[in-house]
Image 1: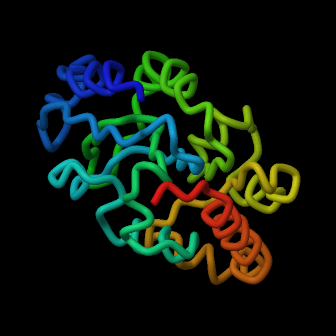
Image 2: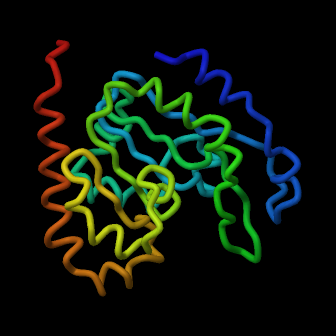
Length: 200
């Protein structure tokens, strides 16, 4: 299950000095949420302040929107045997001039290869935001162009924009996302759920 790796990441303090120097002056708190049995992998950006405080990934309005995109209830979304959540940085990076800082690259360089090796049961990757696109797809495209090319990666992976409410204007400009991509994404998620072995 990778329990030793989970514990090791939870103890990580590599960015302690970096976080202390941000506007929030916070301490590292890795939000670690993965399970080798989970068939769905969500690769996000980094926890926000609310997730930093709660210790629960996507425990914010962005998570509400993402769950709607996937057609998952909160219980399904937080079922660790179904969904792993591996952001590009496990800790909240802090603020600069009131905006979230980008995920520190040292996190992915230190942990991601080892984490991804444990997720051999993953059947669907949901790549949320430009940082995840660049890492998992080696993409140099803009977020819009990469998401528009979703058919190149489906049904095994779906590049997505970040579900932040700041992207509401983007969604209004790109109606094809809701009309074309989301139905296929939700269908793929349901297919995986229905194909899971009955463990009752």
